[in-house]
Length: 611
Image (tube, rainbow, N blue to C red; front, top):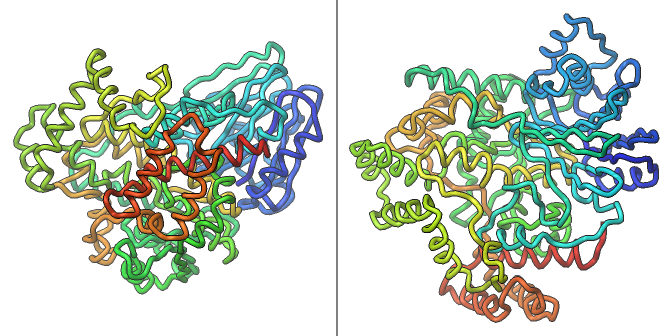
């Protein structure tokens, strides 16, 4: 696991500065390569092959290829064996070298051979090009900017900001976040002129012509459907496949721990880790809130007792938030939706203090296995659209969803499907955005995505656009801030492809969320974990944002001349929302936080103009 940077010209001072800016991603060692055409750098967090043989940038035998790489290729042992049978010779035991030889063998299609998470930049001197690639679901980040003299890229935006370039906010990104909480759904970042390589994308940059060619090498929607044919096969197959996903995530030359919330996702991970690692020590890291409804201590206790893991726990207060807020803003680099991001940030800090380098996490389970209660509505809508009225009625009865809620969603979907009605729908939405200063070009705040209807469509939307891309950004930035490699076995593409296209009534069988995972883990997990209700990983945002410390903090910001002069919001309406929230009249915590997040981001990255 590492941080990568580079650009298409020669500049030793700049690459040193970029390496320094992202050093937290790889504090074990750093390196760079430069010639007259390119400069590439790397900071390394040593996980596999801790020797000097793993130092990057990594060269092939004749030095014609140079690779800087961030991630883990979990199937590298099998790939290496395959490549050796084809005549390739290896000098290390790293997955890094496997990428190089795979490129020699398969060219730009090498990404199709990989199972893992990655973002890499490969300099091909003979063909005079730079090849950038990102994994299927975007677990590892890669940002880039196009300049007059070429391309510059980095694992983090901070790396690119080391280059002296104009720094301005992307107005569309800002408004879409303020209005709808959307982030990371497109290649545009909050910084004008800085882009993200999207999940499952490659870039080929021709160093001679300066032309950039971008291609989509992976699209989940085009993948073949599941091979599972009956309920028993689904349960047995999921259990076996998930076990293999965990096994691959345990490949490491350093100890591997796990996040543990007490929910079925992280509990399943710890259960299988214990089965696979047998007597090896497993350290788990948890966030608890004793006395609050969101506290999951009792469920964490069940897992700790059953598997005798070494449990590390922490709790937080609003004073902790205010102390760390500036560093959190710098860590995330772009605005974020809630303070639950801070909870994850602190769990990663705890792991770092305990000497951990690799953690497994349950990210993606809800989106793959139908874990959110809101999916009940999508299940019912899908049945209605397919005229499976008895299934719709059964789901309606099982989930006790209000009839008005269903009719409202049907009306919104009908409007969303027709161009003339979509304009009306956006008009309705703008009425609810009374706290924003709507720009003259109203399309800037129009909802940029289509609404999902059936369950499969909703899962695909969340996996590729509305949920997972932002959650993975939060996770990567939080973990790497503390030099922790976070691995997410639920996003193994084999597991995703085998489950995402199943019959919706099997994904949420009998109206139950995560039915498949619950059935697969029966007998392994305590029954209290399997039968428990859904508590999302969260912090008590609403409560914190009513505290005197927070109100004083945010009031000072809102009353500042800087805040009043921003073009995005109506100062008086924002202040009124805060007062209503504190008085308990309406929970405005989400909107208030979005506005505050943008303001703090502007102050840190735009006003200060700091790297």
